[in-house]
Length: 381
Ligand SMILES: Nc1ncnc2c1ncn2[C@@H]1O[C@H](COP(=O)(O)OP(=O)(O)OP(=O)(O)O)[C@@H](O)[C@H]1O
Ligand SMILES: [Mg+2]
Image (cartoon, rainbow, N blue to C red; front, side, top):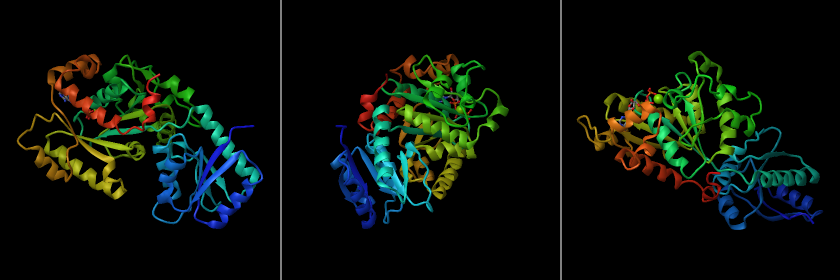
């Protein structure tokens, strides 16, 4: 007999739950563990009952919506496959990165239901479970604050224990190409197919840096940046999230659509700043925009680069202007950083004991601590 599939249903309409229960009565492979009637209780029920597959109604009433449940479950219980149930008037798009492995539309038959539950469960078995990646963008509205330098070194520091992809989001000038000395012929995000991207396509396009990390480069020429659409970025990110555990994005100094596509998709935005009053003012403006967009305050953390070069004001002054705390600090080390950058090597490897490297490692450790426990098992192959 085939392996039994444990199913949990999050549904607040009793008739729909009953309908599912009666459809499943005719078979024994899928075992319906329970029906939970609110989004708020979904996560604790998943943790307690350990289902293989979850069906959640997109139209759940209450504080936590069905798609929010799907996303939370993907992040915290990445082995659980999720089917979102909806009606034709409320279309939902399949998006495994957001926890939506399949979409079941009402009305459905017993055959539709059991086939879909079996299919998502089999897919998950083949793929070895769903990956719960963390995506972090380094952002600043002002140039020259150290985003590219910090992004590279942070990616390498995390790369010691995790599968990391560094994305060159400075689409026009491709800072990473310059820093890593990638040849003009090295493929870029432009070489990914525009329709359905598969992980084999990705493997052919990423640049393997000698420091051990994979890098998705920006196009080699400025005018090519315009050919990369927001949709292309979103599609690339959704497959990258399936393959890597940590994704670090270097961005350009702008709040343009391409940068917003990276920021929207990120779990964490690291705002990079230095003791520079204009950079701090611009960041305060960006923070206002982020609040208007609706980014949760917890999605944003501040990194003070060159934290020992105060320039006449204190950390407390900066925190007051920004109305937020500084979460991470990286000291200045002109000699080491510039020499390492000029050779295209990460200073965290060139001189791991330097204070600047310790600052990066502390930031990496704080990020690694947020990865689900399973990520440790997945660690670099
Ligand atoms: N902690 C540091 N100590 C010393 N030098 C640093 C430090 N961080 C960055 N730099 C130097 O500052 C300069 C700018 O850094 P970087 O290019 O990483 O910034 P950016 O924000 O990516 O700039 P851009 O606006 O060009 O994208 C580089 O010359 C780099 O070597
Ligand atoms: Mg840069």
